[in-house]
Image (tube, rainbow, N blue to C red):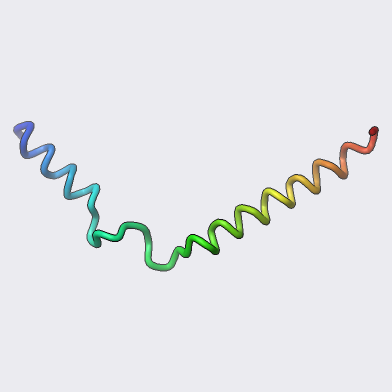
Length: 53
């Protein structure tokens, strides 16, 4: 394989099937909300274990 062919295949792999990118079922709002919920839950758990203050 030449460098040109390798670069061409990597570009087509990076673009994917649709130009929009991402998976159709993943909503950025659901992902962000889930991450926020998990971080807040971890913060709450951490403060429950730190009762010496």
